[in-house]
Image (cartoon, rainbow, N blue to C red; front, side, top):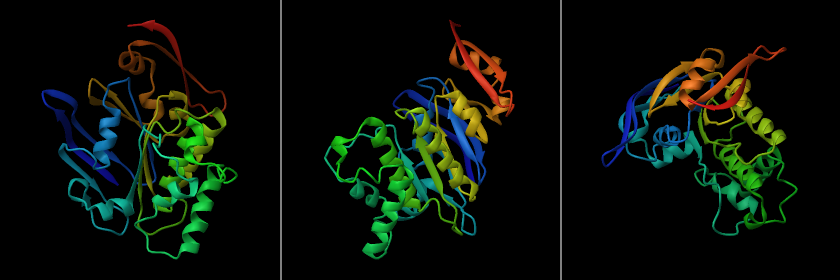
Length: 266
């Protein structure tokens, strides 16, 4: 479980997020939504322990002691949480195996096992046939899938483990085609089905409706609503948060919300 208590981030006189309290249950995929500038990335970076904040963030892996992220060592963070930021570009030409292997630097393992696991995670994101390329030769979507494979490799995310892990993903589907959007989020759901926790920033509200167990809606730098997709993704709440008219209907088979924008500003 991840527990957030009175979390705020200020830079100078500017408040980026304020007074956020929430809980992310083990085994859940949490989607963070909201308009540009609402504080989604700031919240995710705070949960990752990568920026200074006021308040507390505690993560309690199964069968392990509760840890305050603010005080966690780099070694502990490397073992228990993986982060994928929006900035997935890589300034130098690395091999694909090298990037995914970087996620395993904290592990003590034979080279043969490392290469075997790296190959496995590259196959999950369908990049195992691109090993003759380097990162400068990949498309934006392929780079995004590569960074996701690094996160999987870091946590050995699709293996059963007694100590549960945390994955933090900032717009992981933004550059992906439709098939790979669903493929990536299905892998995240496989990760959470083992009792792990994933917190994902998403702009596609229909992906949120399909895959999220819980939704956190940010507006004006604070957490306005939390709950199931059905309870949060309503016309009234979305229209207010996104400042444009939104329509919500039910999917005829799954009964999950389907969201449309009518492009009328409020």
